[in-house]
Image: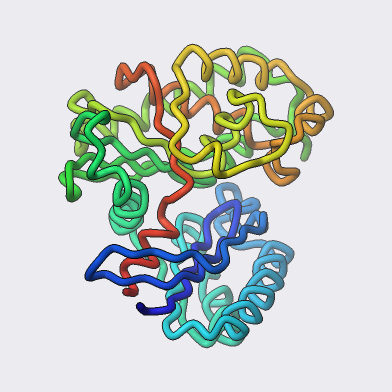
Length: 313
């Protein structure tokens, strides 16, 4: 067994997984998994730069992660950074800060690499199940981008497109520095237009129509699943591998889009850092399901973070 630490730094959140892995047998023992909302991508779509306050939030989380990694004596560490740090012109400030705290250089991976890690993390446990048809379509809805990956045991095609819950919220649901609540039909239509255009791009590379099982990853998907399951508190054991229907997703998305900030904040399974961006995230999920003709989505709590861990081992 190899003890590894994987860090996934996305547009909206930064996450840590420390686990013992045996690549020969596929054995996996999770020791610590945690997530902090840091909004690293705050304003990147508008300014092209990582905001100073967003960098400091991220570095504070890295200092917490460094303590956990030391305490658990992880042998190998890999830090992967995604959409926000790909786009930012001052990303070297981000790199220097992470190296100073964790001692490893963040790898600013491409969208295709991100998609491969997501596929591995999401499907490793599903590959032996007879009740799920192949090929899988893994959809990872992030803050700044969404990854689409089709494959059976291995990736056949992948594409990353610049549609995510933070990017769509900042682009279409913010006016005069505040989120518009509830979203107007015109703003919802603008988001849908961006999503449909992104799906058109994805289809140039990924045969979406060939998918037989849709697997959904990341916070927007797991939050919608938690609401659909009627949970009063977030319970990943019930969410992991839950199957949520298109009808449920449509109903929840409609209610979220018609709600105010206060109404969403009162839903106990919505993390405070997702209250303002969950509307756009749910809309992305609904649009994807409708485009591919999926009657349900299989929700996975294992995603790019687990794929990063396996890549170390």
